[in-house]
View 1 (cartoon, protein in one colour):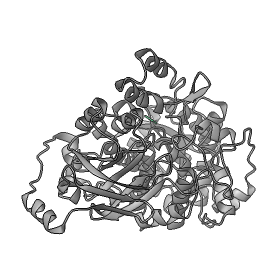
View 2: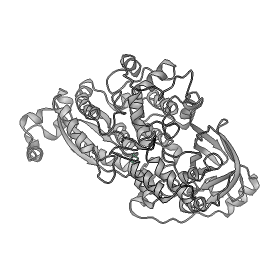
View 3: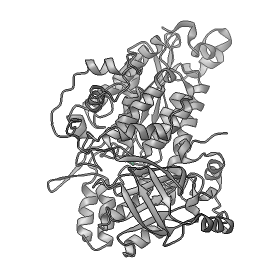
View 4: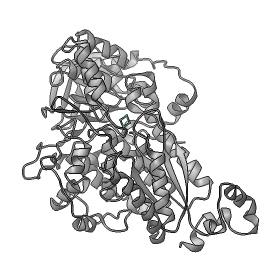
Length: 557
Ligand code: FES
């Protein structure tokens, strides 16, 4: 298989490479093992949280699949930063930083050990785009495998997920619920290991891995704790041998069409706004010119057909019971919204693969038809205007409100904003501005779930808007505008906003305006001074290298 094309030959074949072979003989390799293509199984593994807890077990199963298909396979790890645990803490600054670090560590391991191909297993929010960025960067035969979602909990007759505890804190702080209720939510929110259960960032990226063609069709929705997840792991290992044989590399899969397919899927499922950032970043690694405008175009023509949290009541396991991501993709295909000719890792075009796919839905009501969509328009809008000349990403509120005009309340940190919401000083009609939270400013563009959940918990989800150069969690609800570019730290117009200014957000027209005279703005700009926010170590390196959000906030030399 693969013969002389294999890069592992350069490391392990012939008399000169005897010293290299010594190291793998020490872990049990035989002559037979050296003759086979050498695969890495990259497990983003950590016990510090449930999202990637099972990846070492999955890696064993991937190796079984790979070995029984004629490969040698070895597990190597990469790191995990758990977004949920870090939410609202200084640790959140490391979340987006970890995405690029994960891509870098995979590059270092896969490129340096003579691997011919690899399977990447991702769970939490940043491990997934980090792995996909490395796939695009290395361009070696590779398959993406998701670690799987956790099961939702049940409280009374409702499904609960990790979203509820965040909102319950807001409700408790406002005196709307007691400590006992808060504890009940805490104890029931996550009954198994796996990723956060709604269509938050992790599950969004998992579904998009199928839409991009990097993961086998149907592989994203089986729960973390299930026999199907184990079968998907073996399938991914077996598939890798075919991918090597067929010479399918990620850049053949990651065309503009593939990214467009991901963007319409994001819109149809009302997935996390973080996916916008990650798609731009993966596209940059793949050398594909895919832009915010392309995402906007895809989003505007695509109604929402999946009723998944936070936009709807259902979770990833419900989508699985309804037939999985291919049900959504097939509806997009039939509606003419999917580019059918995009190649997938399975060696076939996505259109023909979907036509052969026979879903076995066990429940109804999770995925709607385009003729009667769950919501008529997608939940993601790209905005531009005097407040964000290079773009911003809007998350439309649950009630579908896309227009908001109100007075600015300005905060230079999430903590100050959270305190104001918790104390009840934020009122209907206000626009909460949280700045210096961008890629360079924070640095690391933290998510604002703590404060957005507090807004929803306080009952202000449809009457207060939030604008920030930071990001949102996939679990965020409400009228939210993030990824404002350029960010405040580099002197973007968001740095010039003052309390009481009027801000207009118009999702339909794609506008975000700071309604202040240009002469007044010029005066403010002349007075503005860069804000000192000293950091060291990794964060300092990141700040020096990171680009703005409209470019995917990728690090570059
Ligand atoms: Fe890891 Fe949500 S915190 S998937």
